[in-house]
Image (cartoon, rainbow over all chains, first blue to last red; front, side):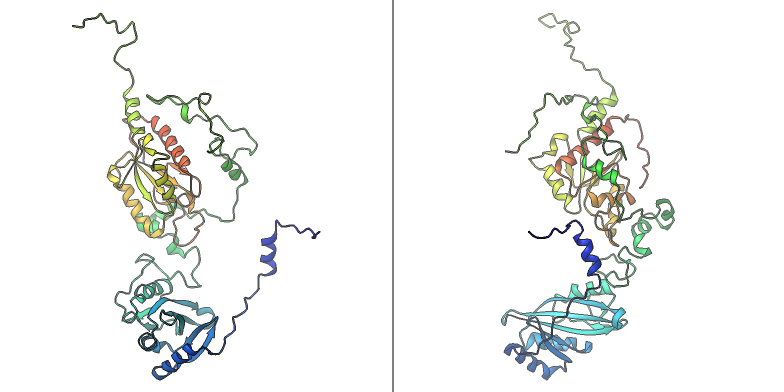
Amino acid sequence: MRPYKPKDNVQKKSYYTDRFWVAPRIPEESVEDEVYKADLESLAKAVNYKKAYIMRGQLVIIIDAKDNVATLKHLKEECGYEVLSEMSAIDYLAQDGEFEIFYQLLAMSKRRRIRVKCRIKENEAIESVEPIFRSADWSEREMYDMFGIKVNNHPNLKRILMPEDWVGYPLRKTYPLHGDEAAQWYEVDKIFGKEYRDIIGPEQRDPAYVSTTDTCNFARIHHEVPRCADPNSEPEKIEVFNDDALLTETFDLKKAKIVDRNR
Amino acid sequence: MAQHPMNSVANAGLPVALTTVDKLVNWGRTNSLWVLTYGLACCAIEMMASGASRYDFDRFGVIFRASPRQADVMIVAGTLTKKHAEFIRRLYDQMAEPKWVISMGSCANTGGMFNTYATVQGVDRVIPVDIYLPGCAPRPETLQYAVMLLQKKLRKRTIFQKQKPKRLV
């Protein structure tokens, strides 16, 4: 027999023991694939890329941020990478003081994917790739919305997810999950005005709070019990159906047929 | 002239029903609660299911309307984001009085599991709510129960009673 292990505390235990566990990095391999080799040789004629390696069978090219348009243009027109399936940014501001911007490309004819990466400083802007890939239009707007990265020569650079008058950039690591002060009062400020903050009061919300009585009463819905009643108390008689509604037959439980099984 | 002698009082067959105006009006009101369709997330699927043939909300006189001008009740079904809060208030203001609000599901009640910067933590921060309906998502029976509770609440009103300004939160 296997030794007995208490299973009710498994998650908590792994949280405390593996709290500082760092996921291993996937190794970078040299470029062996013939198709990728040909692409890299072709790209080297147009752009001076910094580094290229294979990660999980995908080619990753690291370039200078100024070369992004030239690189993507070359990869699209010369190498057949015609789909920009994804692009966004990653916040490395605390670590390196930089954003990493990545472009995920796909060549349907070759069945290959390439990831192009570049890094920019916090206050720098990047050139738009919207003229090459139309899908970059909304992606770049999202990048601007979530990280505050300015994009030069973009046809319509404004917020895409958050409202126009939003303060701050939510996907930055420094942005609090529950929002800054402007975010927490956003709807109140907009609808009622700032003076109304005092009337409404701050959000009384503690996500860790569990009321045992509430849970007990919640499970007995349709059996009315007073608020914060003793969990073992008897539910009161339901009176919903028995008030004097006009031209309505009063509900009688004895006459009703209770279906205890679904057909 | 009636050909047969008719003593209506004796046979309790008087073709007159005696009631109060309040009861008559409330009877009409409770049995024709027109609802403003306000589906914001997955709760809207349950709201649609309760309107469809199996649960048949029409039995209660609940008919979904797409215009706030024709609606008495607003069923807020789903997560309210901060970007949308402005519009829900505007649509609530456009409804004719008297008007009521049912907050359907955890997200509409308290923000649910979305305790984040972009979600309004309960619609009662923006519009006054009459009935909170728990569940994620509540079953159609639960929604119908909420409507019946609302009907019970309405029966207590008198017709000349003006709707009191409701308190937020």
